[in-house]
Image (cartoon, rainbow over all chains, first blue to last red; front, side, top):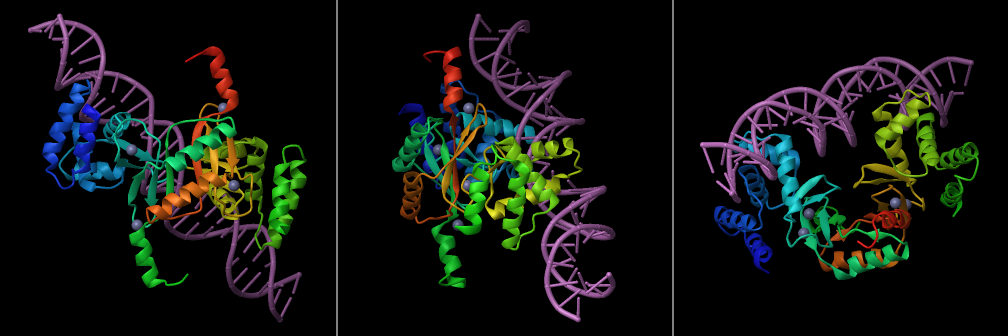
Length: 169
Length: 169
DNA sequence: GCTGCTAATGATACATTGTATCACTTCGGC
DNA sequence: GCCGAAGTGATACAATGTATCATTAGCAGC
Ligand SMILES: [Zn+2]
Ligand SMILES: [Zn+2]
Ligand SMILES: [Zn+2]
Ligand SMILES: [Zn+2]
């Protein structure tokens, strides 16, 4: 509830909402938690909100610079680290890119389904998967971290597109 | 069976066996498949066999150079790509490192359990996990690739070590 | 054995991705 | 206003991965 829950609702409807207002509320919320939402951090989150999908650090940097900013790689990585620590952004190892969390309530198990054609990312929280993984861990005496599994594949849209041009593989 | 099955058995006992002989047999087996096992490729596989764990591309390059070779990054990556295509080596995105496959029978679903303390990697083929993932895929209309999931955590050994120095967290 | 084709290599340079350092600034609390 | 911690900017650098292209090695057919 409260702080984190508010953020979640903000993000969920960000695309359809006035981004500026959402960010202002985010800022207030984070300050309550004792965190500072600075210009750099706000800018980075803003770009990710506007993009609506995953971006690599340097794509993000490009966007920032094209909007008149004078960011540097270090600044971008610092802001991303901040939002990751806050649980609002995930990093995908397989694509070296960053994406807004769809369930930003701190560290959580889950899965990221990544389309290797169009880059779309869907975040899921499938109990069956995380429990199977955790059981595997205990079977092999491994204390697994709570983490996001990255599953790659082809999304429904791309799959349909592919089928039209190359039917019945 | 046959070719691939032979390779698997070779690898399984490589550490306890004479590495040179294993590699010679591997070479014969690959040639039957129409693949060339060249000096570079053999060297890379040899380093991974000797190491017995995961190595980054540049760690591998170091080992090769220290053994008198004059390898380059490109050569190492080419050899690694070859072995990955052959299914004998996996790349771990989360650590940017490469490790011998323990079940080298072509592409296979499975899981890599990676200890973030000591780097140990265990390869598992847990049906429950892969099936749960695949069910999640179909539920979300995602055609998932057959791939290895990377699970990070702390292995039994490191866990025990940690507990001695920092009991009852 | 030669010839000629293809795969692989070596060498070089470059591209991408991520960090370290340190002087300086900003912000919140007193 | 002053202080200390957190954040920034600038610069340089480290780590990871590719492109290119001339040369060489392996193999097939003669
Ligand atoms: Zn999330
Ligand atoms: Zn897609
Ligand atoms: Zn494997
Ligand atoms: Zn360990």
